[in-house]
Image (tube, rainbow, N blue to C red; front, side):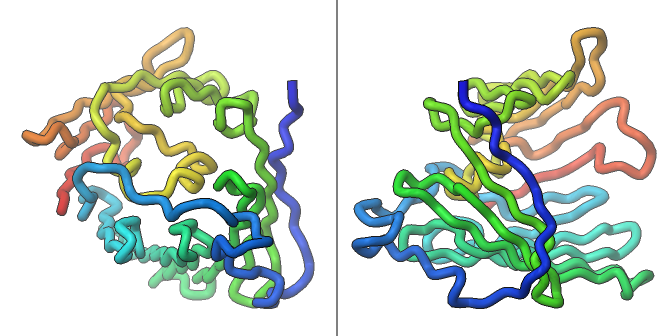
Amino acid sequence: MKKILLFCTVLIFTACSDDFPMREGLEGTPGFGLTAETPPEGLKLKSIGGLFSSQYYYHENGFVDSIYKINTWQGDVFTKKFIYNNLNQIIEVHSNEELPYAPDYNQKQIAYYTYNSVNQIISSITYDKNNVAIKYYTYSYNDDGTLLNPNKIIEKENLVREGSVKYQFDNTRNPVYNIYPKAYRLINYISKNNIIVTETDDEVLHIHTLKYNNENYIIEEHISNMPLDSDDRRGFSYY
């Protein structure tokens, strides 16, 4: 069996745009011969409301373009902007974090992604607001295309086990699954369906009570046994 090659390293050098060429699917590049990915069919997530409320906006290619998220209690704001190449691969993610009560801790980061010839993300590097590399990851895959990680088990595109924690799923579409390209979903363990039970081998940790609309997309979620000031009740709306 292959050994896991997922790791993080702090690097001390600055960003240079020439180091991160756009993967345009031209001859001689890793994306040559691929066709542009299209989003899965289904509703597009518009917003999630709860302790953390999020708004989702879409690129002309049908995938997510940007996300605006706010902590409705403290006022912290988090944004993400996704940059695509002509294969609809995410090649950059620009992330901002604004803390109104602690502005010295505001953050700006840019992550760059590199792909192989079969549309898998094989590495990513993240720079802070000073253009210093702060994170570097490499990714390897199993023969079935799932990410190689012995601590996480994927079945039918769902993360069913993570260490000692197990998940049970319904058979309806997770709305977040529809908004990202496949390669990005894989490295972020975005499941195809919705969690209904979180448990260990010895006990049930959380019950996820879900309410659906006529298209079988969740519109309400209540998670039991959550701590105070947590995002345990959420509402969902769609385009």
